Image (cartoon, rainbow, N blue to C red; front, side):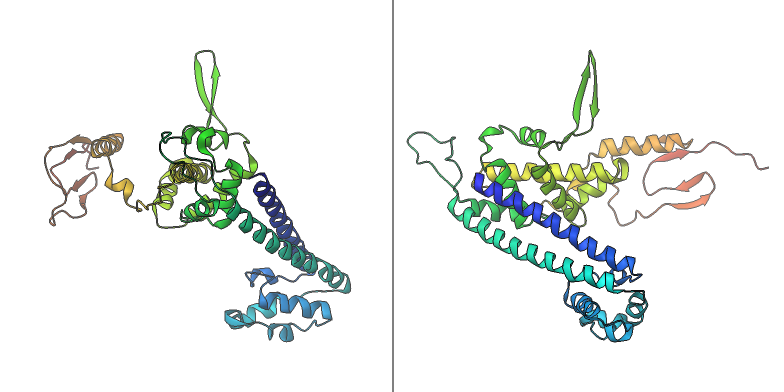
Length: 339
């Protein structure tokens, strides 16, 4: 397991280094007044790399460079001509002759690391199940199988699953509950005590290798239309983007704890409407009444009236301060003078 951890951490460092060198390539182009990254989504794709090689070879004509565009990028020729019009000099060509080679070398090294990680996963088995009795045979699970189970969680790719396994050693006996794992990864607010006063504080640093993987997965899951995406959208409205991502990352790590701890467990999607289906109607009613009262209305609720019939439609406003509601809820607005 220590070898797997070394491989995954080295891969993370190499990915960061490759991204840093890609940014330096874009910085060299920006210095030459070439805004290619504004039009091309990936500078190191087929079209982007062909244009970079042509620039290094001495080609400066924007129209000639635009002819190298492939696929959908060929439809953006006017924007490409404008983006490729700049002051590219020999100094920039020397830089671009070095930096892409470093990116290619790191990409090759990442491929070798991926092969080493896959081979190591095949050789690792999780610790025996300690919950069984002495008469029952101890069950072990391959780390590759656990990685595939974690990969089924939305937003979690193979790399994230491998990092979680490496950093937790695929052994949840050291974390009695999911809360212990979440606390160790520092994906929950800290409790600050001063005498009899308790307050919450920042989550803290934690294990940067483990904390970063669920964070990236949360960023991807937040854009989906599933349970984790709905959870992000519920929280971001009142707590902000950063705290909503931490909450989703915490949920992903809790899911990972259950999948690793129980060999028979598998991920099941709850659906984006899970919160609506489990809504506390009494609490929701109380909150809405308070909002109306804060606006100066007097609310009287008649219980036992169903709001799911086809005759109930959206409120129709009749005059300022009064509206016709789709239920037996009575609202008295403060009287207004007729000026």
